[in-house]
Amino acid sequence: MRTPSVSTILPGRADGRQARWDDHNAERRAQIVEAAIEVVEAGELRDKPQIQQIAEAAGLSRTVVYRHFGDRADLDLAIHSRIIEDVRDAIIPALVMDGTIPELIDAGVGAYVHWAAAHPALHRLADHDTASEGPFKSGVDSISGDVVDLIRGVAGLLGVAIPDELDTSLDTFVHGILGAALGSVRRWLEREGDVTEDLLARVLGRSLWFLIDGHARDAGIVLDPDQRISDLVGDLV
Image (tube, rainbow, N blue to C red; front, side, top):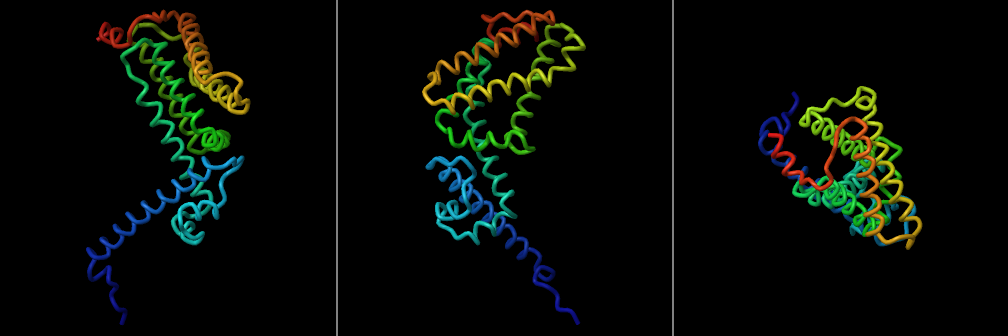
């Protein structure tokens, strides 16, 4: 006769044990990922950190590290996700809808450039992910989608129809803009001391505004660079 398991007799106790393990696993994973971030930022790594380096930084054994991640790919995914989270934490607070459109662009670009300047090793590591279906590419795709939705939303509020040929290519166009910004920052990090980060942020911000403004005008949408976004929204509701 088969003996009932503890989880069958006392399901609540088993559920509690699983919950404690899940909490412990989440905490340990976070500890390991933070250790990996420290390893990357502390050295001159041109590639992903080794498991042994991460384990030593976390004060754990390699076995424990692997116990909390399915494989190396799982760990790399967690590291890249943590980097993207850090980038978002730097950019989102800067995007306040209290200034003009150029000021909003400058704020977002400036926050990104300053983050990259402060964390060049993290940027380099995450940038290797752009060609794959990883967190960095997903982050760029997500931002691109948000920008496309914003452009279409503004056009709708202004009662302006975006030409079909431009509307169908908006995603490609926006990806190109974001790719240009990423490429410029990548090149700047490779050529240390080429220009100051403030100058880079300013030139990138202006360039993005000129691109957006030019294409908007070509579609019949006139954007006033001096009009505050809050006033524009207020006039349209």
